[in-house]
Length: 156
Image 1: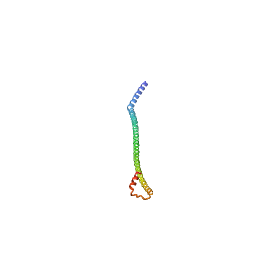
Image 2: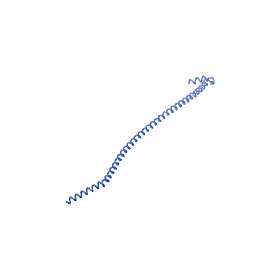
Image 3: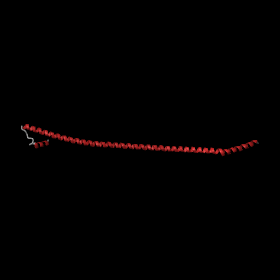
Image 4: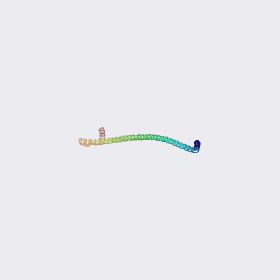
C-alpha cells in the first residue's frame, strides 16, 4: 500500500509542480512568445509594405522614364521642325538674293549692251562719214548732217 501512498504523493507533487509552472514559469514564456509573434508579424507586415512601396516606386520610375522619353522625342521633333524651318528660310533668302543678283546682272548687261550699241553706232557713223568723204572726195560737215546721222543710228 505504500505504492498507493507514493503514487498519491507523486500525483500531489506533480500537480503542485504544474501549478507552480502555470503560475510562475508559464506566463513569462507565453509573454515572450507573444512578443516574438508580434515582432515577426510586424516584420512581415513591414516587408509587405516595403515590397508594395518598391513596386510603386518601380512603377513611378517606369512612368517617369516613359514621360522623359516622350518629352525627349517631342524636343527632338521640335528641333527638327525648327531646323527645317531655318533651312526653308535660308532657301527663301537664297532665292531672293539670287533673284536680286540676277536682276542686277540683267540690268548691268542691258546697260553694257546699250553702251556697246551706242559705241557701235558712233563707230558706224564715223565709218560712214569716212566712207562718204572718200566717195565724195570732199569733207562732209558732221555738224550739218548730225540730225540725219542720229536718225540713221537710231534705225540701226
